[in-house]
Length: 299
Length: 334
Image (cartoon, rainbow over all chains, first blue to last red; front, side, top):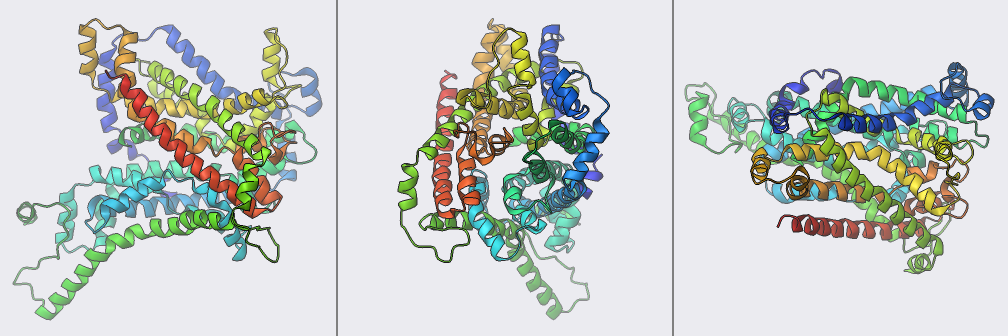
């Protein structure tokens, strides 16, 4: 999490190439686009936002009035529905669990991926090339299909139902290693590492004092993406966790699959689960956009 | 001192032992000890740093996949006392199982109607975003909005939007004078509804990837085309699309790997259907069927066979996609 909170730095080194490209794009088509372009984009974004609005709209009414009148404006019933959500599922526990799981996974992925990325980008060792190819190849392997034995192992060792079962399989990812390798290869000058080595720094100190400070922007991006991916993970938590100790996604599923479905209740739950993510998006959206676009060019 | 030395060294990251000046008062014994320690550090540190990934992948990635193949040869029921070896019987049963083929068809149907329009719209959207918009970051964030939302929450919301009686999609359709559609009971329409969720979520994200690739296209190529009198449309078809080839391959391959494992959307589409994927399994996908067979019917052997077949199919399709996209995109270059 630390990587996310002290974030202002990313844009410094991160957006340099983007800026250069941007000036190119502007001069390419000097004319501002016509209102048709804006119109299409606005329609697209309204479409993107509509489900969020709908969720809140339903959640702010009571079931009877909603089905009777199908109103288009929010009503005043949201907090009542929200408190029913709190009675029906262990909402706070689920929120806490999700934060613990995603937070731990994020820290671990960032640290271990950066370490491996540093080795692949800057250190010489036998088998470096083939091993890196192997890492990239695993990106295409649908490991999700291995959940059956994974479940058996977790059950065997008494891990099912615990948060560890959700955390451990995600502690480091091929994507993370690849991402950090690409960044470190460009961002950390060889001379700097050389100099540190000559001053007698051990490998790990070189990593810590030379590599780590230089890769903070990329590490922050990786942190944001990992956090979101972990937050949204569903199939595996659904299998290995139970209703008493769920993550947010699993709790929402339990809310929906109750034998008596009240849509204002269910959509109050989805609204409550969505609001924290939307806040994160408003704060970090600029970085997320930049991260996706940089990753696309590099990858 | 460092500059001189590092120039002399030449090669970048080649790790060397730290040098001490001769007047340093460290004895030779101590020096060689440090030297040896340093050699070990240089030799083994890289392996130590990459080890976590390989160990974890072996334990939670590779081993489970291989063990899935092993389990698939047994009649392996959850909690049963013994698991008799039955050879390929799970596979022969599976290939004769109409529900499995149904799930396969559903998976591909949903995959096709989610991937193809998605890539097309993403490219067009990227072209719009690539104009000299005012407040460009705002627009980019706007199209990315769906990507950050929780998948489970959104699937539940969409399930409600596509409700037959009170869903607002049907209200809108009715407003335009058409008949209400039974988004859940009708096989084709249920696929459209589920594909809509996938498209809604990923189109903006892919548009940003395509946009980044568009901006990386050198400007002089367009200038040359402009001088030759090529229209905007012609430029788009003859320059932009071919230059986007690697990116489109990337987008299509990743959406193949994800799309064929689709699970959350069909599971939560209708609250009552659950893992059945509709009353007649009309939108049950392979992973959903695998989940049902393994974790609800507790027939792990059967579910494992399913996982393996899907695994092979995904690898094959991703490969075919890769080759096909490469061929299609390169034909435009001529």
